[in-house]
Amino acid sequence: MLPHLHPYLYIAKLFSPHEEVVSKNGQKKTIHYVVKNTPFTLQLLYSDKSFTFSETSFEVSLLFDDDEEREVGAVRPDPMEYLTHILPDKKEVIIEVRIKVLSTQLENSLFVLRIKSNGPNGTTSLKSSPIRAVSKPEQIRRRKAVVVNPPPVVAKSKKRARAADVFEALEDLRSIQQQQLVVLRSILEPKEEKKNLENLTTDSHITPSITSKEYCYAPCSVKTVAQFEDAFQALMKAYTNLPREDRPAKIRKVIHESTNIDPLDISEAIVTFCTEGFGFNPLHFSNSEVSSSTSSSLTTTTDTQTEQEIFSEFFSTDTNFP
Image 1 (cartoon, helix red, strand yellow):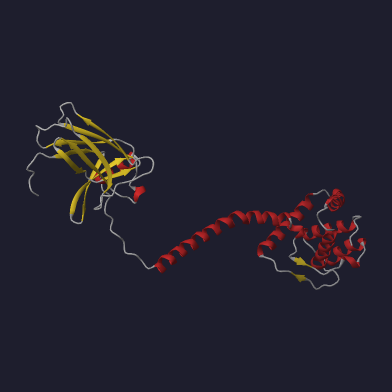
Image 2: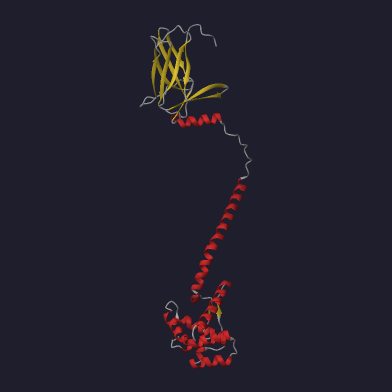
């Protein structure tokens, strides 16, 4: 570049909140960051200190930073406002500028300021460094933080095949589902056991035929059989704890007040206990024959005698079974 033979006007400084030096196509340039609607300033000087700006006027335009020098246009409001301040010594000019458009609104474009001066020394045109307009000061603070403390470079890991990633994700889901099933079983099983015990009288795991000694057994789990045995032992214990003279009345009361139990089920249960436990069908005997038949045909332990007494009490009551 040839040296200037005459005094010239130049931009001594563009005061912006942040600036970055970038390289494009092998050329370095400084980009200034400003905030929309926030003023920033430019300082203009003459190379010859003897020249003054006493009779000089200025015109500032906002252009896109490209080779075409296109002016940034807007219907309303204007894309830029500026004020010119000539200092008292007439040897320095400060131009205050506000940009009212964002770079992101215009395809992330950069801007430049074109400054034209008209005075005794003729007409001069200058262009500023590129400018990027952002919406908030926080964006500039983040840019500064990145420049001061750049993020560490993380080595890229080798990408695995997509099929391997999918298979691993499915295995993880399967493991989670199994854990959830274990938790659900631990919550639901105690409730099911309690419900089965409460509804033991309505369980249908055994379906006997009263008219025949052949019986049909529906499939039942080991847990259901254990519950039935525990309930039967509880019945024997409760019965033996009753005073002998109170047993008939208690049995009548239980049967009459058991509105949620079908009398057919009670009758069926008694017949099954007699035929399977003691070897006789109570439907073929009168009430008086039941007690004598059970006591004469079986040699029993104390528990068996208690069972015989229960069924004798059932048949000695005035309850009418089908």
